[in-house]
Image (cartoon, rainbow, N blue to C red; front, side, top):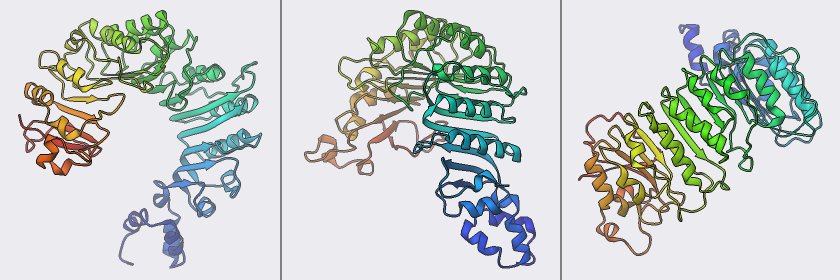
Length: 462
């Protein structure tokens, strides 16, 4: 081992468990020095529950990620450590201490001073407003950040709004994630203004974090501010006032719109945006508010607007209704004319029943389509095996030999009384799988579509 160069030993030590690394320090002086080398630690992650946390923070020079649950109860080394981290995640979900934001601000400032901090994630269910003023000022003044993600609920009076003194003047942020609520609007405006030149990804609403929250922002400044970002490539947001302005953002390629309202002026703005934004390549529409009626018509209208110019270059389209409870009297199938006006559409994910969706798929309506994901509100109660053999599936694959169809079922094969196909005993290797995908092209020929491991893939001859 003496003949091995240091870089080889460092490469091996990257994969050695932490307890064994500290044992290596006792072997010899050379190992003692190597264990403290940055290459051994720079890709490692550390969680607050790790029993070695305090020891690592005292001896390791750097880490890729550190996740802390505040307030700190067992180990206070994060306040004084010389271990510089690139990713810092702070979670206050189990907290009942009134000044937790002060601890968070101290940890952030300390890591920023160490010079390696690039990404911050903050999760806090209920943060008093005066504490948010402290934390927001620290976040806004942290220089050199590349990504900032906030899942914060601010409670208490929002007046007066915090004045963000000391905000950085040099743009660096490339990704910004924040739930857009009135209490956080001044902070969002500050971040989007300062980092306008460098932002690539902006997410201003995440309904999965709080499905009760269907806010409609009145921030008329927001859409023009986003439209003026020279490098913005992906945007996720709710319906915004004046959303049509976003069509002028030439760098924008991907958008997810959480449709939380059917207010006519907001729908018109979103439709105008989709109609004129011919630079888009990926569009996702989530109709998330179950009180909107008729829910499916809103999604259909926006798809029609997207296709109406005849110049759309959208390659991936997703339309979903995650909060619907039943498929009864519900159809989200876009009009055939709309699909035929999306000539380069390669991937379509849609909420609806298979028997409604499949007849609309043909070389005429969707000439470039290669992947079709059908997402019924309720998984089909039939057998996946029987569906695979159905005339509808064989017909659509016969017309579209390069198509891949994805669908999820409540059961992969018959249980109890067997259907015609399960009683024949074919395709036993798929029995038990609820998430399936079918295709008809020659399986020996390399396919450009990803046959992912998250579902069972079946070749269907026609």
